[in-house]
Structures are given as structure tokens and as C-alpha cells.
Image 1: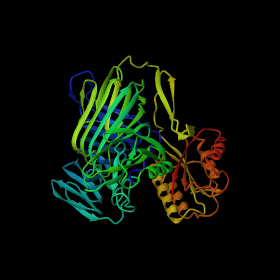
Image 2: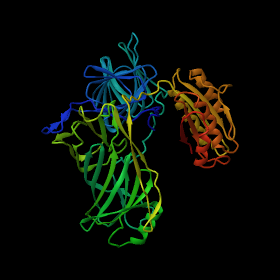
Image 3: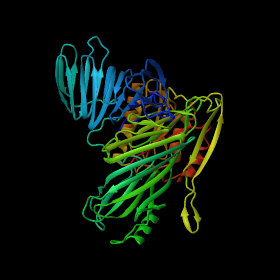
Image 4: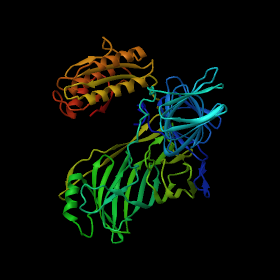
Length: 608
């Protein structure tokens, strides 16, 4: 599990700070951007090329950028090498490159996979992290003590007064006079859940399709990923609309015919336009269908020994699709093409910045791609400047990236900056996309219609800033259907939330089934989230019994009603989401919540 982020107000702006190259100029290597910095709690300052700037959104960093977090603020630094760094409050560090940082003071937690390496410089020495998870702290005391703990893997260190290797479960204290190691039985996880022992769950990167193959009829046998020989991406940006077309070529290295399952995830804000597979040397456009219908159609068309598949793409979940590819002959290739469209949200005070991300970064085991080629044509985006990730180059209005034997570790970022006069100063263009499919009958076939509506918002200045102090109302579902494992998950979630709140935040926690009870206090009002209040809440939660039916309307209403009394109040439900009495569907819950005197943000955490 990665760090639990209480970044409830992040709007997703990605600002790259790099050398700007005019898109009409000759081929130029773009100045490197090497990492993405996002805040968990705000009040973070970044110093780039001598200029200090407070940040309220995600930002791209160039080499030698400096980061400072104030009291009660935290951030996440994701280096383009794939290494993740959680930055605690009152911390200062410098990012020299994607493989080297320096800790000036404060505390960081580093998570690096086996093929990822990071050097961490500190006063009078350095650490080297690879295939491990470690916490490093430099205390601002007279002795300038440095404390490092290895959560998993190994950590090597080299200082003037000694060197060594720290193994999992060991802690080292280093100052100018001594180096002392000791075993630690219990370590306080200050990261909010970023520290996790064992292998991380494997996920296919977004925007990279993968075919998992096996012999036809081999039900129950393991599928293996086919080799990706080619992965070609062609992006066209027209004003603020981006169309991404990807062609993938898969190779069957086996001596037998294979049947494959093609899996694809696309970005959350994308709409899939096209899916096609090759058949006898030409592309056949496929049809997107609901899972059960697609499976029935496939079985009726394909059998062992058939010559073609029906090119059906199954809708599995939002932004997730699957298709069966057959046959894949021995020693031969199959080609898949898919296209999706995105609207690039304008950002910045005057709406001049458009950010495009090709999301291929993988935090576990990245696939190896024989030949990777990406070209983004931004010549129709208007009078613009371009900035992009390291390794890209600009060629006459096009951003180009190519690599052989490519293992993607981070996303590819392209930032389009419209020049003066391209956007009116008092207008910001915004768009809402509705993904709720309207099921209808078109020529006897079920289909889905996607609606996109465009709004123009006027104003002299639109500026979004995160709320500094939070008012959080939490309700734990403790009905009779809540098993012990779910109770433990609920307690872990509650502790993670409380750990992220500071003394200026406010908290109120309920637990219940058809009625609710306040935990850790007598009055139904918010209290400041001090350490004493947090301890009282956790103690009360640990003794609260399960039982009774589930009235989700009552649970949500009690938490939301209190949250609605606070500006920017937040209500969070944690449970299995199965009501047994009261409002039994979403429409009923919406009608009940509409009775609240003020709007409130409501979140749900599914347990079980």
C-alpha cells in the first residue's frame, strides 16, 4: 500500500519547470524535468533556480530543486527513476537528479524497487537505497544526529567515521563521534501506510495494453505475457483536445498457436474512440460490448481451429477493457490499435497552461518494450511554448521520444504554454464530462452514448487554494455483518486518518448500525485533533461492539449533518456499503442528503 494521502483538494495541475523551446525551432533537447512533487498537506515551498515559490498543486522539478515543508505539512516526491519519497513536516531536501537527493534536515521515507537506486547525501556521509524501504531522519540538534531505519531490504551507508550495511529491522544512529546499530522490534510508521512489507501488487501500467496468452482450451492454466515488439504512440493536440492513438505489436515466441487476453486501462478522463485488431494484414475495427454479451458473442464465433476472432472489446470496469485475441500463430505477431480522446484542462490564473500526460509509469514490474516511439503533434495547439520530460526532443512542432529495449519507470509529461494574447485574461475554459452511459436500442443493438458539455466561466481571476485546516467527520459501520477482519481494517483506516491530522484540524467520529454513538467524547461537536483526543477516539473504537441492522441513511446523515456546519466540512463513511433498513439504494440516499442545510463533501471507504 502506498502512502494514504489526505490531499482532498488537489486539482491535478502539473507545472514543469524547464527550459522553454519554441515549437517552431530546430530539433532541441528539452531541459530535463526529473520528478513530480505533490502535497499531502499544503504549505510547501519549492526553490527553483534561486526563486522560492509556495505550491498548491503538483509540480514538476528540474535538477537541483530544493523542497521545504512547514510544520504540519507533508508531500510525496516521485522521481522519474520510479523511487517514491515521502517528505515529513519541517523537512528540507535538495533534488540533484532522478537518482540523487540530499537531506538537509527533517525526515523522509524512501521506497525503491529492486531495479531502482537512489543516493541520499547527508552531513558528512551518504546512504544508498536499492530494492528496499527505509526511513532517514536528520535531527537539527547540536550533535546533528542522523537516524536511519530499514523497513525492508538493505541500506548501505558510508561516513567519515565508518561504513556498513543496515538490514531489515535494524536502526543506526550516526553523529560526529560514533555509529551505533541496534535491532528494533516495533517501529512507528509515521508515513500513514507507505511502509509495507513484502512484494507490492502488480498492475498493468495505464495506456500500455498487454496480451496474456495460453494454448486454446487450457482452462485453469497460467497465462504468460507476450513480448511487446513495438509500441508506437501518435498524439495530436488541437487547441485543448488531445487524441492519442497507440499501435502495439505482440510476438508469440512459442511453437504452438496461442489464444490471448488483451487487457487495457486508459486514463480516468479519457474516452475510448477506437479499438482494432489485425486480420490477414489489415486492421478490423472492433465493437465495445458489456462483458457478458461480449463473452457470448466470442464463444459463438471462435472455436479451436477457427481462423479469426470477432474483435470484441469487453467493458470490465470504468476505464478498463478486455478482448480475446485468437489465433496467435507460432513465431508470428498480432497488432492491436486503440485510440482515446482527452480534454486538456486549462490551468494557471489565466488558463494558459495545458498539461498532457502519457501514463506508462509502473511502480512494480514494468514490461519490456522492444521499440518504443512517441510523437506528439502540438502544431495545432496555437501560438505556444513547449516543455517536456527528460529524453524528449522538439522537432518542428512535434515532441518526440524513442527508445529501444524500453522499461517505463515514469510517465511522459508534455506541457503546452499558450503565449500572451492566446487566452483572454478574464476567461477560463472548463469542461465537464459525463461518463454515465445512456443505454438505448440502435438497430437492435445495445450501445452507449457519452455526453460532453462545455462551460465558459468568466471572472477577473480564478485561484484555487487548498483549505489549510480540515473539519473531518467519520462514521464507522459497525452493524452485525461487520466481521472481525473488517473491524480491524476500519480501525487501521481511522488511525491513518488521525495520524495525518494536526492540532489545528477538527475531528468527530461516530460508530453505529441503525443508531450512532460518538466515540471518545460526550458532545456532538468537533474538537481539535490533539494527541489526547486521537487517543480517546482510538480507545473508544477498540471497545465498540458490532451488531444490529445497517441504516446507511442514518449513518451518513449524522456524519454529514455535523460536517455541513463547517466551511469545507468533510464526511467519510467506512464500511461494507450494504444497507438492510432505511434507504436501500443510491437514489434514496441522495434524496435524504439533499435535506442538509449546506452542501458537504462525502467520501466512502469500502471495507470487506
